[in-house]
Length: 416
Image (cartoon, rainbow, N blue to C red; front, side, top):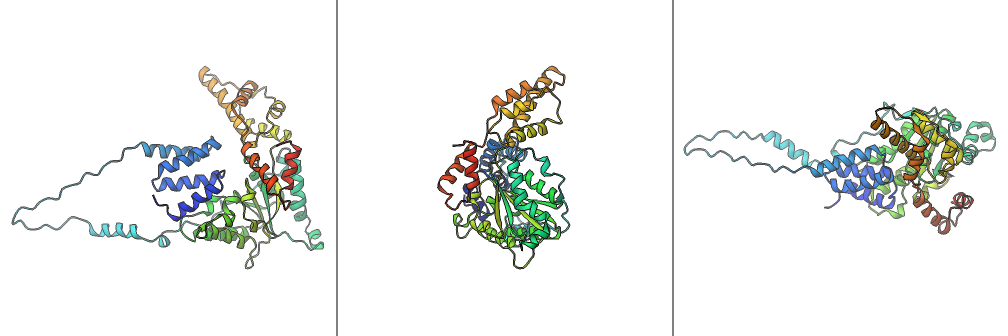
């Protein structure tokens, strides 16, 4: 089957960024819409293999499975009545007006179809206020210190910035293994600044019609400017701003990257009061032009949660559940190498074990440390493949010192 341009571009982007679950889900959804359920099913399986708790992937999986299992009904032709010889010809009951409308819908070109709605001035749900602060982020003192030095400190002291003739232009890129709280940290930065928070994902700006994705990116920046002060947070930056050298010359994603570059360092509009943050699991796949001065010119490595952070994450995910005798210190000590998402999975698994026991006995039983220990025997750290790639990048792709911070982290934690 020949791919339409949008599917072809997304397939290429997924091949370049196979760990981008949001991008994979977006592709699976479009494939399902086009009736290509078997292909969509494969992408859903890949997402669930990485994150078994993803409800969107679960729903799409059920939809595709049901569609593949359903028999395809064959239409039964209705024979036209044969008029008796000499009988007057009756007027055909065929609705020519309706048929004309159907043909018009089929041949209508994509560029005159109803465009996907970009963010409008009345879309108040997109821009929110964050009540999260850096104090709510457990542990991770090195990350907090870097944020204070590179972003928060200067912005809290505008007179000092003025004295040194510095500006707040440009953006900050958070990078590290998946599931380590980059989005949560971005919300905490917004809360610290007392600014609005506007999170943008791959599905928010990638549309099927030509030119609509570029229009959406411009609308995103316009919305952030209207709501300044505003933290504009781009998730999965590697999927949005993929290296143009890795894209084909006719790829529509190439023009999306160019539009993003224009808006980040706009000559026609001011980004004053718009603090741009991005998050990525694969900074080595981000176009180098995106990391030039005035764009994402500062990078902060967000590594695995430390011991204090792991205890805090365990407390967060168990606090609203019936628990008894949970030793958070023991949980933190036994989960070195786990991401925040891995720890959430441990807590969910332990809760499911207690719930299964309660269903069997008919009485609510609290989650105990024995459930946590059983969950730890089932759940393994998921970030190993990421660190395998990171080691190669540090060894062979760090000639300009971009990943010195990552190299120090690997040495300090003896990740070889």
